[in-house]
Length: 265
Image 1 (cartoon, rainbow, N blue to C red):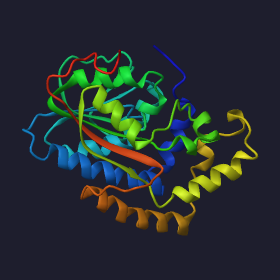
Image 2: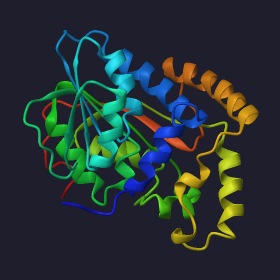
Image 3: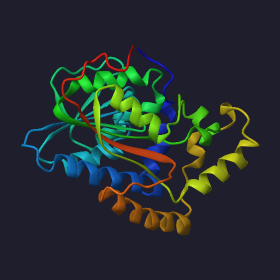
Image 4: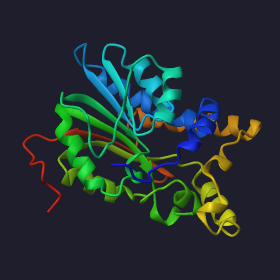
């Protein structure tokens, strides 16, 4: 099933800037730390899948961190996989999260800023829970706070932004046990709120704006924010719960003996 979840024209600007931009650098560090902890005690040969791998920015991290495992990347768009191939040597699959082309169980599934693009997020969470091995883990990130909704979310084809309690309830009702959940990107929250309110005065419709418009490097500010957010990444590695942020991070393991239909009545 093809749906308007993302504009593949954005892959090229993403690919050119992700390695330098403070937001992507911070997300890479946070996910790297979490994936390292999750897979530390797994037997060699464990299976890792990133769904919605896009240009391979995070998939590259997973391949490096999960060197004793077998890492796969999947994306709906061949345009993204073209760039992912430049960054990784792992297996890549063109596929739809709403019709997953996998049968073997997975030990770790990564879902990074993808769930908010899916109209029926509850069904997707149930399907992913069924695909996890016993004690398998779903590691995900998502945009936080519905009150931060703006032209950016419209243009990015988002269906929603999440409050922490909402995401936690959706995970537990669909068969997961929450191991850790927190807001992150806390330092930039007031700046994001202010920028999007100000720009929202001129960008009345999604057609007036492209998410790639915000993908620019301001040298001093970019490095300063990257440094400040690196402190946040270290706190998250120690499982601190941050009270605010523009994004959410969740580590959720497969809860035993839970019906696949849980949360879908």
